[in-house]
Image (cartoon, rainbow, N blue to C red; front, side, top):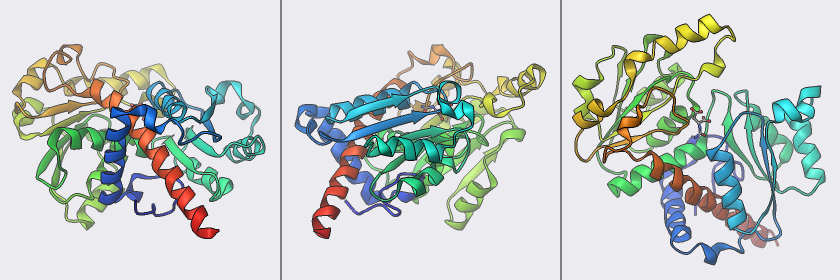
Length: 328
Ligand code: NCD
């Protein structure tokens, strides 16, 4: 595997080139088919999961993946409520603390953009830090598992693909990471569908323009008219946690998404070969009546996350070991 740019940390999805993805997907498939063959990969390694924001899938799958590879895993959840963060401790000091206990890997979810990158500076090159979501910034491992899901479905990413992304595009870190990652493939075009107030971040729009990627922004709720254009429809929830903590403002914020709900009628209007994805958790934006539709892939996507995260840990450890051997 080609070493990651800025290795060993995983901070943003732009670090991954198509060759990394091919290698990761192959390893993910190998682990899925014979997990026992990989159970020694992280034996003797200590992995810390430090989470200050809520999580079910990212925390659960990283924990299971690290355990599957033989690591001893230390989990700190609810850190914004129950750790010394409440007393004003910084993430940097939290990392310094757990390094004293011999932790080697840090998988971190924190509430502000850029916070995990700062933690990586403190951890240094001997302690890989993986961004499991930095506020409304990025969530690179979600993008890896999302693209793995697309790759499994369409067998290749070097082909024309129309990806519709709908919801709170401004604040959803999963879609930021997904678009940066998919932009490595020139055949991918985008429909960005959102209320006018939550359009895709300008930095990502500029990135697509610089790389001559095709995209259309749709800010009128006419999903039914364009549903048959997509190969992939990626749905995300309104990120109300980044809005003012005032019930009326929150209600107003949620209200604007009510016209952008993906339901069975929209799903049925899509191409037969198209798929529907969602990083979860879902709220009202993806109706449960879509679950029976053969295009729904979100539960497979969740399972793919386990194998992909195990593959990522395997590849990072493998690269660390070969670099250590070269240094010797
Ligand atoms: C996402 C997240 O935390 O960004 N969840 C996840 O990790 N699968 C999506 C979300 O919270 O909307």
